[in-house]
Image (tube, rainbow, N blue to C red; front, side, top):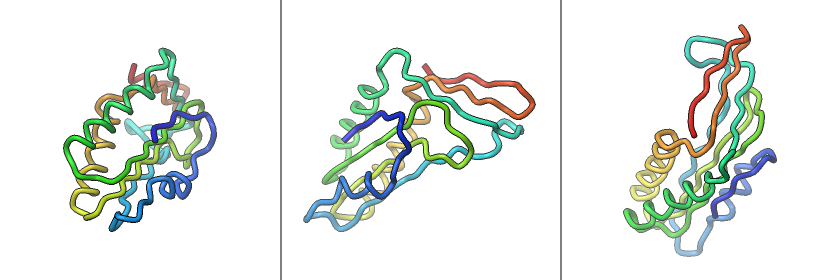
Amino acid sequence: MIQITKQPISAELVINKVKTKNSGGIISYVGLIRDNSQGKQVLSVEYEDTENTAENELMEVASEIKRKWPINNIAITHRIGKLKVGDINIVVAIAAAHRQEGFAACQYAIDQFKERLPTHKTETYTDGSTLIAGK
């Protein structure tokens, strides 16, 4: 399950979506908006999917993971819109028979998200400055 949403993300709901009877565990990553970046205090972070390509990009990451590791299920939910400090911006959940594959797949998913950021990201700082990254 790959989802781009404007609504707050429930990590528990995303994790529950990947449960399977043949999984030994679920490895998850919950990304948060932190209060500092680039040595500055963060006011907000806004993610925009201006080209409507984020879902496809994350689906490609999920496909790569399924080819590389014997996982049972995967879910990636990414929140777009204006987020404040402490908000969840991404949840990755991987169900696998064994923890080694689950941890490796989850690490890969978040690394690829950071490297290929599928959305346009604007960090706004308390001093009024901004940083723009992504597509």
